[in-house]
Image 1 (cartoon, helix red, strand yellow):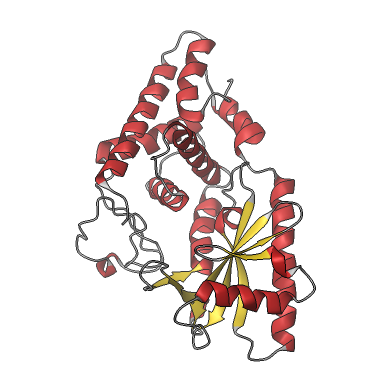
Image 2 (cartoon, one colour; image 1 turned 90 degrees about the vertical axis):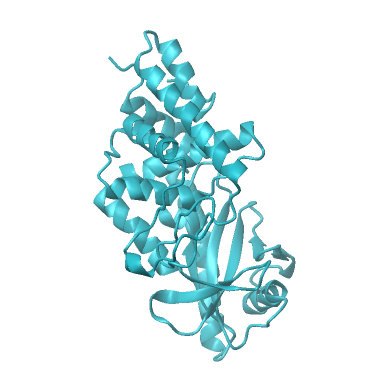
Length: 318
């Protein structure tokens, strides 16, 4: 008989892993405040360079961890108005103009990739600029900081992609995503060179969900995630056909890992990963899979908990 059950993991999720509903709502309220004020300014100033704000990121998707202390929004910018250089500084000033005396100008700071608005509560909101040319489904273009390349994206489609899986598998799909993201967090504490972006975790879990893996059985679902990583060594291409046919994908890119953005077949979200980083992920996944397997054969709760702590960290007590 398995000692650590679905119920044990679910209880740990509520107590430790998941962002509390009231905290998520407080974050959404802040975003709604910013969005409403921006919409008012846009309405009062026809032709203003900023078009609209959309909530993005893990809180919007419902996959945020309890450790989340920032929010993500995307602001669509009239493409013709955006400068060719200095986009972040330009964007920060547009935000100060839009919010006027509603927030202190010093609350809007320029980051490396985007401006950040910080509230007195400590909550920060990253404001990512997207160049907008009026396309449907809020399709626009991110600008790569290092190269200046335009990268097609759509917040609306990204949210719809995740929500479709959540609708098909209520509660459990999002919970497995959070568990995987928590495992990544545990690994990063153990190894400062460990990389595994949240978007990639969401897409791998999405692939397995689409293939029929039972997400309601948390131990088994996590085992299947780790088994996929170990068995494929992350050399198997991951892609989806929600918004484009498979024929739109490029030929082999030569990237170490290929996990494609479900709204843009030209965007391999893992293209920067090195061979060493791929190997680190596979090794950590193998250790996690071994620990889950060993937990299934443990004869005492202490042994089973110790195994699961390899996956979920020492805060897991069974």
